[in-house]
Amino acid sequence: MEINFKNEILRLKKEKNSIILAHYYQRPDIQDIADAVGDSYYLSKIAKDCEENTIVFCGVKFMAESAKILSPKKTVLIPVIEAGCPMADMADADGVRELKRKHPSAKVVCYINSSAEVKAMSDICCTSSNALKIAKNLKEEEIIFLPDRNLGQYISEQIPEKKFILWNGFCITHKKVKPEELTKAKNLHPDILIAAHPECEKSVRDAADFIGSTGEIISFVNKSSNKRFLIATEEGVLHKMKLNDPDKEFYIPGGGMSCINMKKTYLKDVYNCLLNMEYKIELDEDLRQKAFNALSNMHKLGG
Image (cartoon, rainbow, N blue to C red; front, top):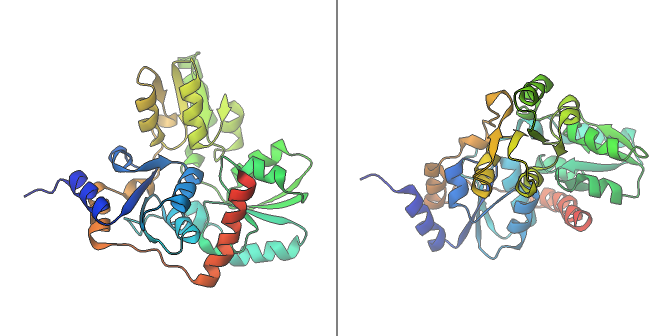
């Protein structure tokens, strides 16, 4: 007999006192069975404050790690252990240590898209939605920002009085967007508005009408009276946009922007995750405490 994964997930979730969190980049059917769907910052707050004993994090590994860092007594599961983040893998603790040695007066700000080891070496974490606020709130004039050079550059452009030392990392999905694709869309649809994630290259950001995190892009589209949008971020956000605004038209640069790691999770994986209580995120306690300080500072300064 074929398993109804959705019904079984809902049953197991209740039985095991668990909450399912899903990032906006997850598949539509994964978003539909989640208790909360959002960007990294929103989900990190939910994970920290939720009453459930078990968190099933439908996203990539650094997100599940962040939940464990914030809630060490909770069981944190990730349905697909191989779901990683190439950008997060571009940064390493030894490299951060060397940058700190070269710039002793700088504060280290790491994007939440980073490993627990890198967070442990950092002073404060940020997300794309609060990075600017955090950088402005720091009294230090020198900031080491990692691993995403594009988000770091975007923030630095708005705070010219501060010096940014940028790690040379990037998102392989957002890097695919080409400015000529935006020009083509404008030529075909002169009324189209372009919303881009700050992980996009500068040439793309410069051509956009709006720049913001996934959550901010969704809000921008929802509040706009415009009817046609080009969305320069991972196409998973379209699911929420279409639910919010079924009368609006949405386009993706190049015909598609899909993160292969975010799309590794299927309903069957979530079912097996709850059924077998796999895969558990485990962290060394000393490492966790150091990383916790960076995430805790994010919630204090990010507001």
